Length: 515
Figure 1 (cartoon, rainbow, N blue to C red):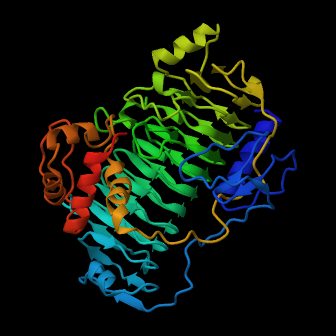
Figure 2 (tube, rainbow, N blue to C red):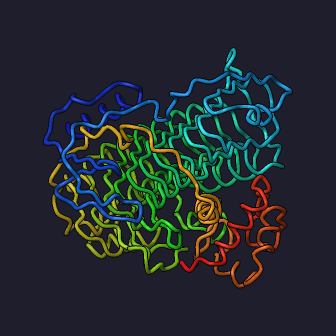
Figure 3 (tube, one colour):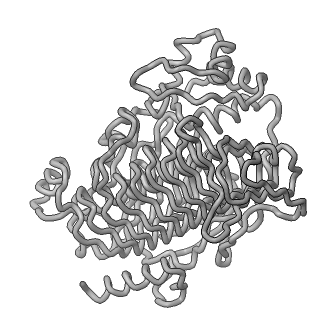
């Protein structure tokens, strides 16, 4: 191993075990700018735009500081203690904004909905024993939150059919130090939220993504241990995210940065993947047939699909049998559809120093063929297929690669000065105008499983529109009390925690969308 690789490996190890490597190595730093939507970086690249962008010109800023707390806890409240045999949901119903719910060790068989702001659910650990939420393979979800400034810590969650912790349009969230095993489709799934932290969780046995960040902004995913799942960590249709210091192993695919066509948010950009262990992600793919993740080849370390401005830096990427890093556009990716409003190309991908070894040792035929087109053979570290513009790489001679020969040399070598995309102050609480109720519920809940044209966990919206046409009440009734209709899709979980007016508003919006 070269001296450069040894240094990089030691830096990653130090960071992962909790040491600080910032300032240990002084090299040319990227330009750091800051705007209301988060920081930007790089060699003069212009920040992408989206419907949520402020439109303000980015201005130079001093170093962004990492915060362990992103929620506004200025409201001091009461503490509610839930003992074994009691109901967590009952405590939530009795709680007021600013209250904390302490859950004592024991076994709890329930689904907990949090639609209030400034609520904390904290599991109490006594002599190594935790509060366990056990769905008994009957309940779909453990924790569903739509309130702002939500914190959940120290729980053990297992045996659910859908999700362990799902965010539904809640801002300023902290999901920390939870143990999640076998909870169905997703482990941790914040969706349509801003300014959130997912850290120090252990997640395994998930049939889609262990940690899935969907349509969200300003996110920090750090110090998690994810394994035995189809996707380890997935950043999908999200912006301004850092994924660092995670241990990602024995998944089908390790870390993913995606644009999934057909979702309301059309972009993924400003994603930094750094200082992670991404090792031995060779698990057999057991994702739902036809879903996007079911097309991931076993043995993929990092997969970048159509996402822009992605930095891959100082990771240890090893023993992934297909390839260390796969980069693809939509045209060459399996199980994707075309969305004319989504850019299908992964532009401005930036691969910096990484320790890569023994990847691609048992690769798929398509990867071998791509290497042969450049008269190369051996184990594949980096493979790029399809169109990509303005991407760059440093120290390309260290890697066995295909598709990156014409990439330019990156103008910077690290992102050390950018500690986080979390904002200096908590995001203002989301206030839902009654006229927007349907669209917010659709984006925050329905779009997690349904794209407009493509296949995710549920059927495309176009099919639902054809079935129900001018019958929104039929959709609303089905939302409350669904039944299995198709053998090739899992049964939809009931969303009867939504009131009748909200279900009808979501149904009407679903019938009205055109993209």
